[in-house]
Amino acid sequence: MTKTLTRTGLVALAVIIGAYLILPVLIVVPMSFSDSSFLTFPPGEMSLRWFHNILDEPVWLDSALASLQVALLSAACAVVLGVLAALALVRGRIPFRNTITAVLLAPLIVPYVIIGLASYIAFLQLGLTQTTLGFVLVHTCLAVPYVVINVAAGLVSVDRRLEMAAMSLGAGPVTTFFKVTLPLILPSVLAGGLFAFFISWDEVVTAIFLSGPDMTTLPVQMWSGIRVQIDPTVAAISTLVLLVIFGSFIVLGLTRLIQRLVRRRMADPATNTGA
Amino acid sequence: MTAALETPAQTSTGAPISINAVSKKYGDNTVLEAVDLDVRAGEFLTLLGASGSGKSTLLNIIAGFTQPTGGTVTVDGRDITSRPPHKRGFGMVSQHYALFPHMSVADNVAFPLKRQKVAKGEIRRRVAEALELVELGHLGGRRPSELSGGQQQRVALARAIVFRPRVLLMDEPLGALDKLLREQLQLEIRRLHQEMGITFVFVTHDQDEALTMSDRIALLRHGRIVQLGTPEQLYAEPNCRYSAEFVGVSNIFTGTVQGRTFVDGVSGRSYRLEGAAGQHGSSLMVRPERLNIATVSAPVPDDMDHVEATVDDCIYLGSSRTVQLSTDAGLHLVARTEVPRSPDGVVPGARVNAYWDVRDACVLD
Image (cartoon, rainbow over all chains, first blue to last red; front, side):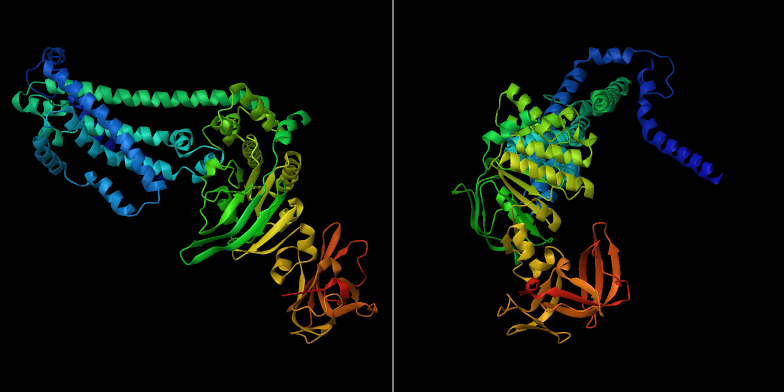
């Protein structure tokens, strides 16, 4: 009896916490379909005018494309650098391992305002503000820790003896990495890459410093959008962004499911012949 | 079966390995002290020792995973001390199988052939042969995780021999298997060795395994080779007390050699020495199967030495019987007798004479 009560209580608590985390995000969805010229909740008349508005104003598409470009490039750079760093930290015999780890993970702790300001000052002199390169440099720096943490955790769980076996079978260090280590840490690498992408995709603090009329990312555009005009275009953008994020998670989940089904089917005939 | 055996057996010949004054230190901790060892071409050599004896370190130095602090390793007379593992071309099997979990069994076995850029059709043929050789021809499509421990170890074996290495290194390959499976695989590995004719270096802490499989055994202790010889030599002619105690069971009296007798330091009894007379040493060793038992009333033959003891326990082992004894001086002895010859009156608590032919006792350090 008490067990059922505790269980019900726990489920209720979980639902409340889940709602607390997700509802504020979901609230923009109905707001984006509002017919009103202001951000209102609950929305009155329903319409798609704000979605039309996005297409009419090129700044939204431009900034979204800029964000996508920056996020993809940053994620790619962060994955390459992060995987290499994790390999060195976990497998290498390097001096000052702890110090190097601390430096690599520093962007997690250093306030983004400081990173933004510092890179703004530095990039002004180099002419890198409002450039894709500038954004990618800063966002890569912010995203590397997430890749390092994910990949290092993955590497620790890969048996070193597998790599030793590969070497004894004639595979050099590079072949061993691509044929044995990488396939085994691929989930961690993909997770790290996904983190890196979203870190860049919704990063606003350093982006504000680096943005300008020549180049603005979507989060900065949204932020300035809501300051100069409070029409629900921003809500419509948010809805689209949410759609992209949830969509990508659903696709990822489906791929995993399919992979598992395929693997099971591949294993089955073998089991039959074996028996 | 026989058709599958032909290729590896015909094309591979074992390589001789020479280990010259190889030492390994980790800081102040010396793991190997100037080990010299010549592994003959095509022989089955076992590195036997307790944990911490340095046997695995020595194997890893041969494999190239560990760099020795000093000394050289040569194969076919060529110095390979600083050659990386993937350029040595030795097969290796470890206790933990180390099969690639993301590949099928067949892809695992094909791995070394792909590194050598062998043609596709040839790879398929040789993988099938190698799997046939370890009697797993039907399981090529499975994942390693779907196999039993014994099957996984066979796959590891197939993968290590499929590229026809001239040397196969094995680090306690049977350690994780249960007794029955281990004994079965011991015989299979022996058969593989005889069929392939390549050099096997095998690491184990299990003396029975070493005796069963090896052409020669190198017994290691504290980073040194204590004794090197055939299984018969190690068992019948141990060169020191450690060797006698590690390989097989032994009864050891501690004392001193005085002329033609050995004086037991604990009980003060003296025993005759025949062939061993004049040797230096502080131990007198008699193997359990050389120790005979009779009740105290029975006369002890003339050319025998004896000690009085009390029977602690009699253990029936099917083909033999083990009798555990305590001498009056508190020394524990073990005697092994054939079951039909089991003497009367040997029951727990009985007073008996434990006696041995003086030629069966040997003096050790």
